[in-house]
Length: 137
Image (cartoon, rainbow, N blue to C red):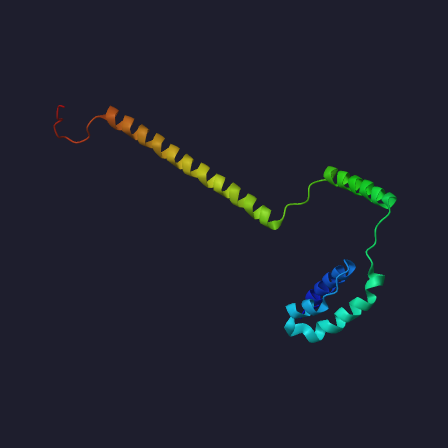
């Protein structure tokens, strides 16, 4: 069992002890593979439980902390925005590249359209180039 999981189980058991319940056997039954590791920890937690009582801050401390947090939050909101991440820069570059591609496609279509119209006007004003007869419509 990794340390983080053992710590979480131990602290939850301490919380249960604070509510007046002592069900170490049930806790151990939830983790049968780790019983050998958990049993001495839970026994120690039970012995130390009274000294691990939750701390309740004074109302003055809570008020002062709230004021300090509000001041810190206000100063952060006025600060410059954080620099863009690499992923955000890539998305911006991709968007710019896409916009350039679309504009280039429109420019090519516009150029081809104008070129085709100019060629058509020039062909009509020059008349037929071959020596053949014109067919009446």
